[in-house]
Image (tube, rainbow, N blue to C red; front, top):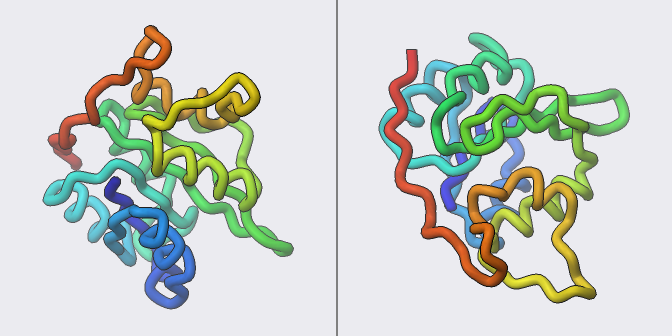
Length: 157
């Protein structure tokens, strides 16, 4: 699974990137909107994690360019006492307006995202967040799964 981290913070503090790599994600970095768009044109990306405010635009502007492409995106909203993760794009569909996730809920979602084909027992149902953001990874037949998504062919303005 390929993740693009967008924002200067990811260069300065690579804690999230280290955690993602330990979970099996491949991470690329872009410090601004221009670099992010360039990297999205050149690389297959499954998940975009972006700061809300970038030097040359916003994470919301980047999310708009991802609509219609097989990628999911979250925007990190910084608060005085921490941060929240706002869902922005769910497998190419705009989902701004959904409930923002606390860091703990977001971490559980990433764990589900890193292993979308795992089987759930009745005692361990998938989280609500998993169902909302990973419908594309599961077929309608229990126990059967779709093949992994094809590489997106992004044409960004």
